[in-house]
Length: 103
Image 1 (cartoon, rainbow, N blue to C red):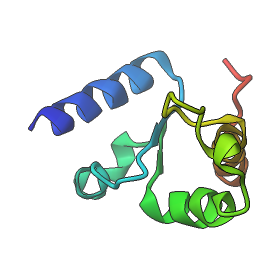
Image 2 (tube, rainbow, N blue to C red):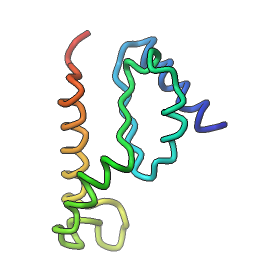
Image 3 (cartoon, rainbow, N blue to C red):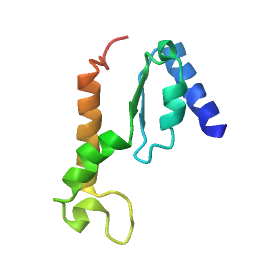
Image 4 (cartoon, helix red, strand yellow):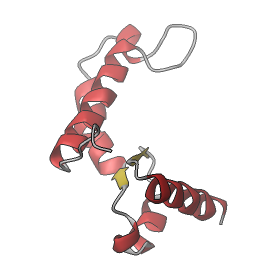
């Protein structure tokens, strides 16, 4: 229930203030919640789930060095992973014709 409440809150906020909310969810922990939502409420919501993540990040990450994948002795994503994630988000924005500069 917490994830559903959280998602509802973000969607309501995005709709109220007319901004695009992009949820990156590699583990698909929100997948079923998203699919149960009324699509008319989702005009300001973009979901990037596990399928997109695996296709555009994980499948390309195999070509990265360990240091590009993760910051050594830290565990956070490294520069190479961050670039792949940014490209995924950019491509999703572009394919959904999202205008980030409109008011």
